[in-house]
Image (tube, rainbow, N blue to C red):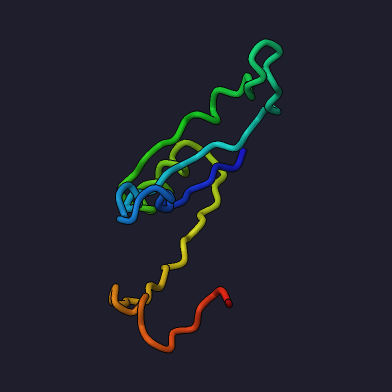
Length: 101
């Protein structure tokens, strides 16, 4: 079983970097998800899929995986480049518009 070690990305519902500083160990799915007959929800008998272990650094997560005999893969995030702009740039004269008349 190969676990994933990664740094979580920010959700679409936030503009800050909350909950993105730590590292997470995530187990792979062992069982297929199937729809529940009564409600139609996805269900699975795989309980390890809901286990996420949180660490402060990648080195801590890697040492935990090694100490417990886990095969692991480390997924590194690429840093996002942001273009700083002023709010007034949205209304600048001569700005190219995505839409045409």
